Amino acid sequence: MKRFAAALVLAAAGAASAGESGYVPKAAELRDQPVATSRVVARIDAGRPVELLLRRGAWVQVGSGSATGWLRLAEVRGGSSKPVSGAGAKPARPIKRSDSGIRGFSEEELIVGSPNQSEAAKFRGLGVDARQAASFARAANLKSRKRDYLEMDEYMPEGGPPPGFFDE
Amino acid sequence: MSASGARSALLAGGCAILLSACGGDFNIQNVDIGSVVKNVSDLRPVQEPEEIEIGRGVAETLLGARPLLDDAELQRYVNSVGLWVARQSERPELPWHFAVNDSDHVNAFAAPGGYIVVTKGMMRQLRSEAELAGVLGHEIAHVVQKHHLKALRKNAAMNLLGTGVAAATAESRHAELVQQLAGPAKELYARGLDKADEFEADRMGVVLSARGGYDPYGLPAVLQTLSAADQKDAFLALLFKTHPSPEARIEKLAIGMGNRFDGFAQAPQNASRFEQATRKLRLASQ
Image (cartoon, rainbow over all chains, first blue to last red; front, top):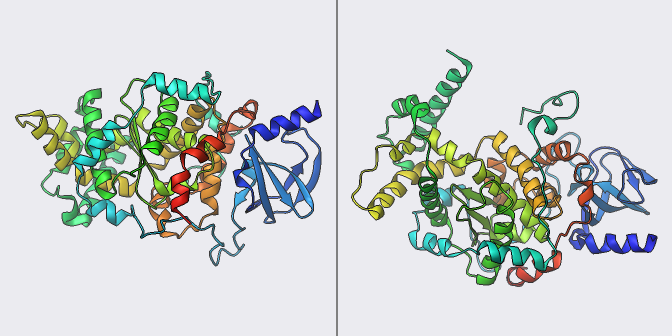
């Protein structure tokens, strides 16, 4: 049974985080399974770096020192922790760009551009129909399910919004 | 003056300051903003065909900055993911069109009526189909909630749909619409929507991707990727200017999602199908 569960984890997990670095902005508990009730294998101090290994739903598998375990996605940030003083930029994950010249979509390029009717006509030519979309979904075992939107009051933690919620 | 009246007046003032600061770029100096704003609450609802035509005009403006990426296989793939997610929304029958444009900047845009553009630069940041579904779900939510349409309607030039356009043919009418729309559309896409609209699109986007059967943590994972990038990177400047910080978005999604989606832990991410569809992009970048 345990082996079966492990195989499921591998099947569902997104491997692509592997090798990326991150950190925990607040002290966090590393768990041995991507389940809130599973055993805590290590405690990580605020600001400590972690290596991102896998993501599975709400959970990210990370390596921290000699320990490996799972944190909730919201407990992990990508990149390196910012200096407490706020001075200096954090080392960045580079943005991949074209090998032959930069093709922009900056604010300036947006403003100086002229409406492009022929590209828009091509755009209107792109699309699939509902039957094709359904067949595309079936091919990857995607099943439509009912799910209500998160209401605003649901979106708030119990006891109302945290300080600064509306200050963004 | 009521609170909402005061807010409208502030908005109108802010609008006028913005437009005058923008000078000739936006070519709508002759519009009497005061009278239009006064009439905003009286404007009739925009019907769906008009909304789609406005979206077509906005798409022409967005594609004026950068054209589409020439990769038919990728365009079809993005349309397949996009329509599947859009079919889970309250507006499944809109004529949805999705596209990747040829820009290294990291961004995505929605225009009224179902037009959605993702930059090539954004595609390169993604790791799986579930992440793409999350990004598209966010943009689809903007269309479902008519965020851009409402923002454009707050702006002067949208009065053109009432009585402003009286051209003889559909084509000349559209040309006039595009001309009048270009300035306000550029201003809106350079300034961004209200942050509340962005948070709403986030929390709807994760649900739309979950309804489509995807791992709903695709969007939070993309935001985590963006949180790792240099906040001063020029290729992220417009995205970061027009959206709340990735950290704030992750935190609000974490509050909203709580443990409601823990049952989706086995939902597909489809990393391998995504890798296959984007292989030309990866070959072209080092």
